[in-house]
Amino acid sequence: MLSAETITQIAAELAEADRAHAVIPRITARFPEATVEDSYGIQGVWRDSQIAAGRRLVGRKIGLTSKAMQQATGITEPDYGVMFDDTVYESGAEIPVDHFSNVRIEVELAFVLKEPLEGPDCTLEDALAAIDYAVPALEVLNSHIELEGRTIVDTISDNAAYGAMVLGTVHKRPDEIDLRWVPGVLSRNGEIEETGVAAGVLGHPATGVAWLANKFHQHGARLEAGEIILAGSFTRPMWVSRGDEVLCDYGPMGTIACRFV
Image 1 (cartoon, helix red, strand yellow):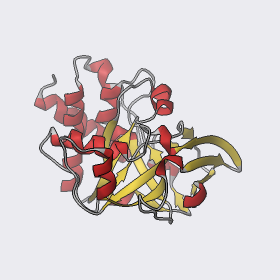
Image 2 (cartoon, one colour):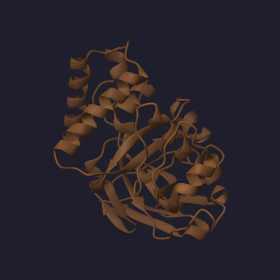
Image 3 (tube, one colour):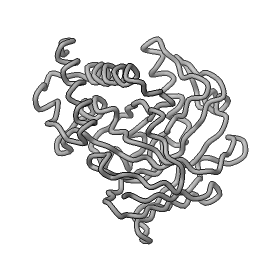
């Protein structure tokens, strides 16, 4: 495992890379002994520095929950990161592409909790009972670590590659719609690039919420009422560049549009 000094050093590197919209060499290339526990330690130091600087935590991002994403990244277990208030956009937003590195888009559902949720034995049914509503969301990936050869340790350290999310306007309670069959048809500049259904996320998109509650319990924490949980992509990531117009059709849950400027 890494020393506390090394963890703090890497967290500072990532904070500077975020500020400068830059990319740093792989952590695992420089510190092959780094573990998953180290990577969450790095993320935690970075998170705390951001909160100390005045950013407000609004939720959690879960990643790598579908076969499509695991195959796209070569990583075989879920991960998670934090989301701050200044990373949330509404549908129709213009998003500055220069604020991010290695910019890609993923199709997801987000859940807003109406009550706290904690493990250690949280089930899908428990998660559904704690969810106020589901809302479609696009995640903007933001990778500050070189992509080639990266591992789960690199990704987790880099806040699970989270950059921002764009939220839709249609809210559905879990008892109003079969969330497994919410579709996603993702287009860039009028051409369909990716399609999928939400069941691709662990069989049910809210399964990741239960997984995260159980994961948090291992660290003596829980998910809180009002938090937004971004549940994981059910398509492969789509690269975007300045000038791209993105549209995702979620069928009965409406559409999300945004433009990168």
